[in-house]
Image 1 (spheres, one colour):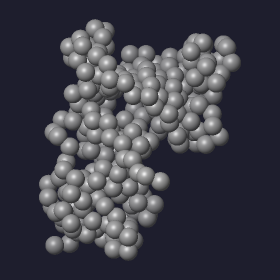
Image 2 (tube, helix red, strand yellow):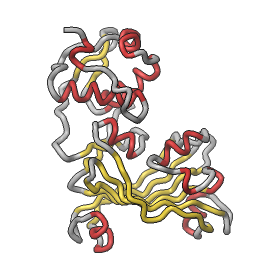
Image 3 (cartoon, rainbow, N blue to C red):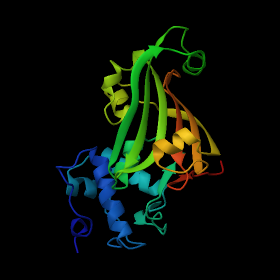
Image 4 (cartoon, rainbow, N blue to C red):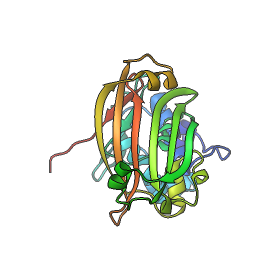
Length: 252
């Protein structure tokens, strides 16, 4: 059977980057055993010819699946379907060793991201924000507070602040903050994250439709540009019953 018959074709009517659409096809084929464990993928050049994509796009799609263990690269042999089991239904594995946005994570798993805005506004930087963002007192910032959903299910609550020089307006952010920053050449390349297990307080629990005290993964994040400037500070509250945080570690 030809590879494209096993995996399928890209849906040109689907939104989102092409590498995420290819990633979704590969993931579904692996999860549904149309690509069995141990089977070899065509080379990046061959995949590029089949899907009319650049090798950079092909590599970007494959890298994420390699990080998750669904694919593995064997030196001198190629890329093969690995033995990692698919994530539990309803749960999301979030890699904390690879920089990606919420929207990218959801789209790569075949889930539809959406948001409900609680706040999207401009204001003067607070003392804490000034310290985290490296801004002078009184500098303008854009603030974003929203509930994040996957296929209509609440997943997380986000509080984000971005220096005003990073965006033309608060309304420039529609679904993905990183897409809006990318349009201005300001997508972060490095993040510093602190993760802590807590219980949801009453206010946050009500917003996400869970019980007060339910498990929460709290992530305090700063995102940096190549020149070292901080482009984003965020406090994110992820549902502990819906998220697994995964990090790949290696010995130097």
